Length: 461
Ligand SMILES: NC(=O)c1ccc[n+]([C@@H]2O[C@H](COP(=O)([O-])OP(=O)(O)OC[C@H]3O[C@@H](n4cnc5c(N)ncnc54)[C@H](O)[C@@H]3O)[C@@H](O)[C@H]2O)c1
Ligand SMILES: N[C@@H](CC=O)C(=O)O
Figure 1 (tube, rainbow, N blue to C red):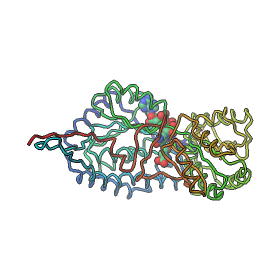
Figure 2 (cartoon, rainbow, N blue to C red):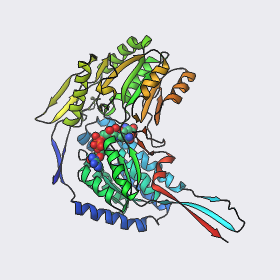
Figure 3 (tube, helix red, strand yellow):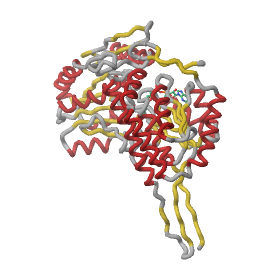
Figure 4 (cartoon, protein in one colour):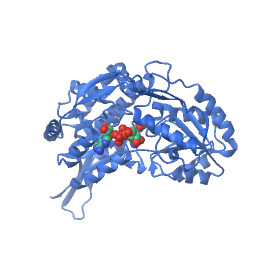
């Protein structure tokens, strides 16, 4: 591959053809990033904060253009894409503030004539790898804390959606960041993975993407003992307890599930509903889902965009066929609008009942607008089913009882919990997963920690 062909997933039209970086060119950029670290780490936190604020201002000024770029290359509805720009910039604003709070401490010494000072310093050059589903936010969620901490940064966006990243990096340079401090590279994943993991100059890898690729990067990085942040796949459950506010549960389920056509790491993949309210809930949910309009995200009326590519579409169809063959009932959906020649793929929002644990979608990430529903009769059973996955990213539950809510929250083994809340993400919270959903947290005061090392100085006075 010498060129990266970027397509509009809603139409299959080619948006851009961009030359990919050669291995040599990537190595040069890594060397430049490592060299730039020597002076960048010495800048003051206030100076770095000011540059982040200048970058944020330029992104806000270019909000509409960036939103349209996201919709063009990712497909999500323009309203969501503009929301993603705001979400992306909120990480920059947050870490512009956090840059100034990288506090150290002093430790009382064990003898009178010693003083001990603990400081935090930047790790070095960070290699970032990002997915296509949030081309702006997954990048700034890494770049902002890295730059705030004093690290230099080099990002490889997904081949499906590099245009947003390229534009964001241009804006960073326009804001005043030195060219070698924040860079992007364009090449296929395995090539960059190979280079990043084997480079002694890349001191940290921060990756958002699938669990198998994350595992591969971790294995390879062991050789040079790199710092790693892994934001990997998920298989979120929603538990609807018997006393849940069903209208609220329906509204929040729709928000959580159909954002980005279900192509979101925190998207619910299983809906567990108490048997006594299942019929009412399914009826209400179906009525609401029936209202969702599917189509090109540039049309403001559409709420569910296309699937990113044929590979993603085939996976969804395969899971649906498997479920139906094994006895699932289609309440709504399981319909498609696609054209392999033109290369676009839409999936109608789908609800399935009579779902069983042996169906593929109950174990694998679907990454599409599909809700499989299973029923339960006791909350302990629901918690066990919810936890029965190697993933541990997000989980949601709906109950009006504070006792029940706390009981469920304590029983769930997931990094992110939404109680009566289908949209728990934000720059100010520690986003991340347990088990095979990842290592480390992004966002919040926790999100800058992975870019810092601890050093202490012991002085005899
Ligand atoms: N936990 C989170 O915060 C989070 C956020 C968004 C997406 N995700 C996950 O990302 C996945 C969807 O994205 P995807 O299908 O593009 O994932 P993916 O792992 O195939 O690709 C993600 C990125 O990794 C690159 N890549 C692929 N193979 C590589 C390799 N061998 N070495 C280095 N880089 C490589 C890709 O080019 C892309 O840039 C889902 O599993 C989703 O849950 C997780
Ligand atoms: N949508 C997630 C990112 C993963 O896809 C978020 O809320 O940040």
